[in-house]
Amino acid sequence: MILFPAIDLKDGTCVRLKLGDMDNATVYNEDPAAQALSFEQQGFKWLHVVDLNGAFAGQSVNGSAVEAILAATRNPVQLGGGIRSLEHIEAWLDKGLARVILGTIAVRDPDLVRQACALYPGRIAVGIDAKGGKVAVEGWAEASELEVVEMAKRFEGAGVAAIIYTDIDRDGILAGINWDSTLHLADTVDIPVIASGGLASMADIVRMTMPDAARLEGAISGRALYDGRIDPGEALQVLADAQMGTS
Image (tube, rainbow, N blue to C red; front, side, top):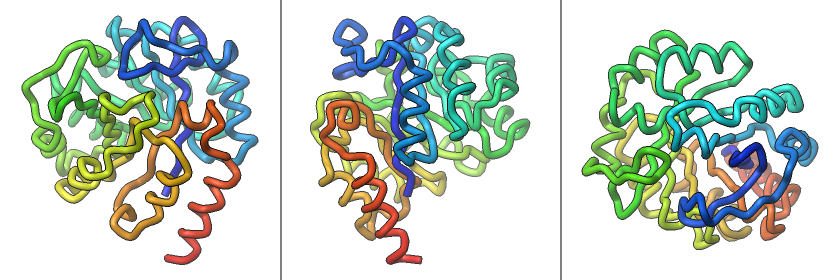
């Protein structure tokens, strides 16, 4: 069970949004690379990065900040936001990303996802961002008519490394993960699922150790880490102890 600390990039800084609203952003660190190194030093083993401007623009906007992050940390990094073509995918993987996250393009062009999975096994994740149970696209600015499970099932057997499932209605407001929807998705598909959106406290960390959550690959934490609602050492120890108990 992996706890992924999140760095969301807006205008070159490390921010957190509330409910996916770009106009409601809190800046937590002016130096994303320093934040990445700090997370590594705290004991985290992965890093989740989103280019928020890129998600809206449809192309990389915070590329220099991402490259600085890659130079600063030895941890594997997964990146989403504005990655919409095979050229984008190849360029980022060549720069050292562990995996890319495809969101809007996965809705628009599922065949491109399958092609990318074939070309880069184990390095392609799909981001499914849900608002009111429907898949949202274009940086959460538009809602589609696609159901979450329907979209996930499109990629069964394609070689997708993970699905990052974000409940936008809970993102950045510390309301707790939508465990019902997340676990339902994990039960429905064979692709590993990562929970995102709303992780609020140590109660959510403990919830990650429950037997029914074992099928998840992990969860992403942003605001709760930055606000100090979750102590990194304590959280990682809880997860490690649980893993020892089940191994």
